Image (tube, rainbow, N blue to C red; front, top):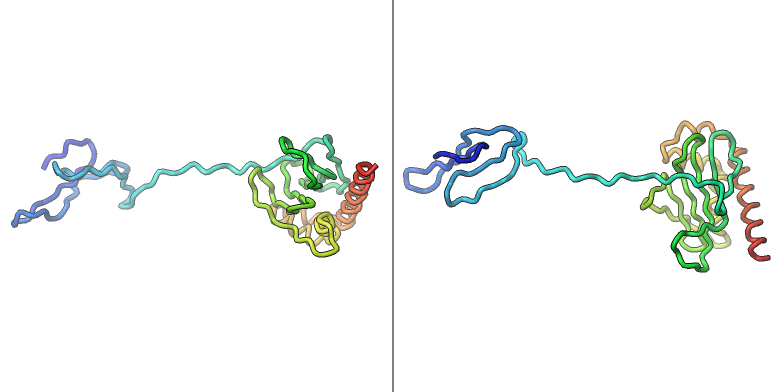
Amino acid sequence: MRCESAGPCLSVLPRSDGTLGTIEVTSYHLRHRARVCSGSVAQTQRQILGGALEMPEQPQPQRVQQSMPEEENGWHRIDAGPHLLIMFNPNRQLLGRQPDEIERPSILVAVAGKREQALRFDPFSLGSHYHIRPSQRGRQIPLWVEEGQTPLDVALAFFDKPLRFRGLLAQADEDDVAAQLDDADLVGVARQIRDRYASARHITAA
C-alpha cells in the first residue's frame, strides 16, 4: 500500500481470511505525524516522541511579587536595623473600593536593598491575614485572633518573639538575612508600630 503523505506510513496488512490483520510501521521519525493508510480508516494527527504521545506545552502564568511602596499615602518607614526595610500604614485605603467600616493596617517587610516584599501582615479588623512573598493573587494565611487580642497584637507577636519572625523570613527564602537579625531591632519594630497606630487612632478620633 502506498502512503500519499510526506510523513511516516502505517500499513494495515490483511490476513488470508480477508480480515484486517497487523499494522506495520514502514517509516517514522521523531515529531512526524503518523497516518494510517486505509481509504476508510480515519487519519490520526498525533505526534510521536520516543513511542509516547507528546502533548503541547501550556504557558505557565508568572507569579509577580509585589514591591514596596514609597513613603507617602499613609505609609511610614519603621527603623528596623541594617538588614530590613519595613513600612507601616495604620489604615491602608484600597484603590477603587467603596469606604466601609473595616480598618486595614498593614506591615510590609523587605530585605534591605530589595524592592520586592518578603512578608506582608494585614491585621485587618475583619479577615486578618498575612502573606509570604506576596503576589497579586497570592495565598492568604489567616491570623488567628484569640479572645482579648486585637489583630494587630497577633501580627506584632511575630516581632516580639523574634524566633517566629525568623522562621517566616526563612520561608520567604531569606535564610541568610534571618540569621543576621538582632532581636532588639525586631522588638523595637513592634514598639514603633504600636506608637504609630495609637497616634493615628488619636488623630482620627479627634
